[in-house]
Length: 348
Image 1 (cartoon, rainbow, N blue to C red):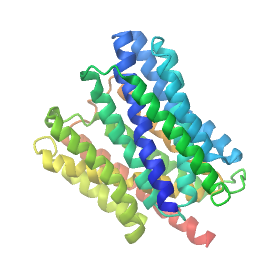
Image 2: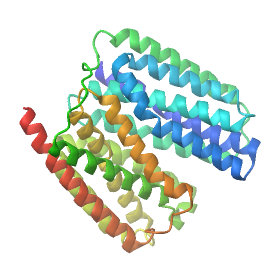
Image 3: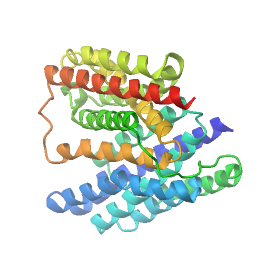
Image 4: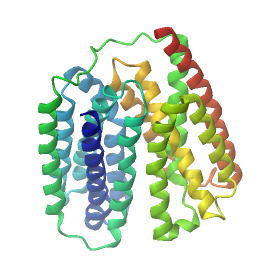
């Protein structure tokens, strides 16, 4: 049953992110054109889709109806298409829907993960492909949005069915206001900073070889499989080993990534392997507040994206900059995972 839960959420994760990307990149952009209003609409979408996952996650922890939350998220994204003539409103509704879906799905997946990273790696991975393909829809004339709405409605119904199947089997821990000690605070801050760095770096990797659609598509597959493999391998060899190996290897590969697409793609794959590690580690520390944990890291992703929104994309986008930044990320994550290991040993 656990594999079925992860499979359903992962597929619908792809659908929701694909739908939101189509709405923002294609429909809203067509209606609003370029300029400050479109910029504001995109900022609003990203704020509500990412930063709002924290308060929504805190509420969802208490409500304990995760699949229903995700279903409501799908419905809101579908409704957002009806407001496409009002770009900012459409982006706001879609952003909230996206956030609610992610929180509900994220909590359920973490609940069945048994403190391991494999399931969360699979769940978080599929969204990247949805965003990529939805973003590419801006270059085609796509007017049959009712198909997207229909798929979202089917997804919402599927999640209601899922809720009925698992409501007595998959439950949230009793919410307890976390009392954070020094080790936990250091671990949490290190995990959050790591995700801020990953969020920023992930958005600025606009290598020239990505102008080829095939290579760009392969690089997105690298993101997807990087997150999947990070969780799977991390559970086998340990969070510390996979974190250090993946980041150190990616730092080395980034040196050659501008002139060699193969090494660049491998660098992207390795760089993304820590995603399920940071999520699982934080949720294990805040095990009574998994929605809060999920939301904290999506806030970190939003913080990492803010400089990109304002055009600061070239600060470290060179071989030396990427190498140094990734090494710094590895050091910070090493400290975080070391503290996390100490915390978990004391809990057991």
